[in-house]
Image (cartoon, rainbow, N blue to C red; front, side):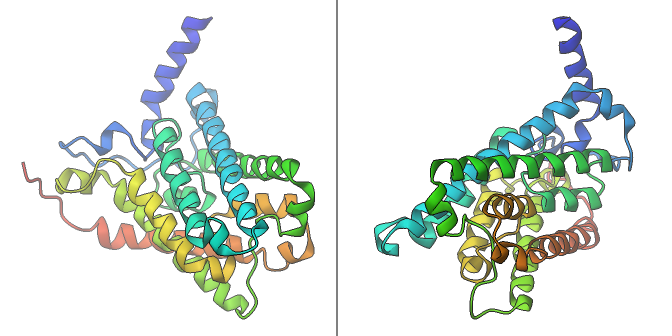
Length: 287
């Protein structure tokens, strides 16, 4: 039984590896070959252990992401002043640092998406099938809900009193401001994902770093620095949904659509830009 399961893992990893675009061997191979686009539907994935293993990895990564980041936000809001806590910069580092660590840990298993907007952008670029994309999004949302739920279990009173880390358009900003911030912020993130994991670019440009999680995590950090004062920074629909469901107050739901529409538009724009502009550059190997 164990031998059959091990064989299934090997078969799934070999057969469906092109649907896991982050950190795969294809992206560090200097003998570049254009990978074929992923099929829209891939029923065979449903019988592969690697498919479910990838979903579990996405669940756990998003769970840990919400657990650490929401705890950090709660620690900031419980402090008497920003100077006596990690401050906004510390919160931004928590989000960016966790993405760096989690993408590094899960890239070879699921691709390390940890974000429905990233999954959506990669799906539009035909990097993974619709079957896998939907499965990832469901597992990401479930992981986010569980992560925020654990934080609330630690501090029920303060969690409800201090907003539960839920994303909201802050006073002084309009819904249009919030939507624009989410679109541009997600564009920066997904564009960085495409650039950092592009097999063609890694094969052509020797200066492109192999460690893709670093620029991705740094992009998350910078976007948070810019947009925490506007929306608390969503750019991840699973993160926004998990916090909103566990907090479950009217203010968390009033503008919640912004944290789905904005990231999905931003991801779509990044996918289109990458496919039309970046992928159109002719490949010229330096070797």
